[in-house]
Image (cartoon, rainbow, N blue to C red):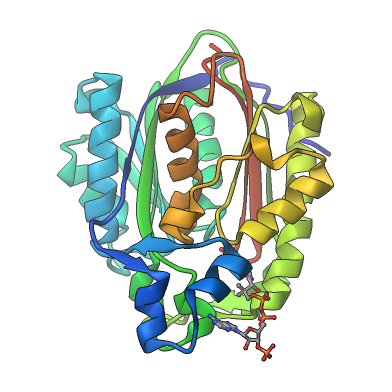
Length: 316
Ligand code: UT7
């Protein structure tokens, strides 16, 4: 059954920010140490370069600070910080504690880990907190996958990278911008993509690819149904940026043209929790989203998880 938001108190974005490490690694750089090539990586993934460096906390503090600045708010008015990450800086405490202190917040803070679906999970959880009476939530998606990547493994090293995106959602008196959402997970598939504690990522690439298309489409269809929209009423799709071919296959099945997608992976690689906020706010900053547009966010990742949400831009 699709889950339709029932709260009378909704929320909408009032500020956002993104952050990427300065260091850039190109495909040609990788081909110096790996048996790969710029041509192979571009053709099979769409990725051209990626940013690497920093910690999950440092990138989160930078994107969070920009979001607070854009919103023009006092950090002390933020009621909760929800940080989506699958690469925390420490096992204990949650990285959100470091970020909360770094941003000068005085509020509850916790991490969410749903791998690459995590930002959508965190965003919906943030809306849930608003429905429970909080007014202002900082939601951040950050990953530093370069720290758990085996840089001698060409199956994974060409894909993963680091980045962060943050958003502030603020309570509104109407239903707000979240029209529909969906969460999914199938733990029986956990061995397709995993890293042991202290270890590096292992991935069955082909199988992840095959499953990814299906679970993205399933999740997107559930969110569309919950929001009462059809795919041709979507103005922009913001998919998880893992592989351009996955996005093309999913959009084809959803009958959404690629001209309606927000794609940044050529410049960022797969930054897990950060891909959706990086692509969403890049599109917003470049004037690709106008008030009233229907925006579909859809992610998938290790677990295997999936999550999607339909946002009506600027709706109170
Ligand atoms: O956030 C979620 C995480 N992950 C994903 O979404 C990843 C999903 N999977 C993928 O994106 C793709 O499966 C990959 C990009 C990982 C691989 O692409 P593929 O088209 O599925 O390639 P493949 O695994 O079928 O390999 C084709 C060939 C193989 O050689 P042979 O057996 O045909 O001689 C591989 O050994 O390409 C070879 N290969 C490479 N060659 C150059 C695999 N990786 C590389 C590489 N450079 N980096």
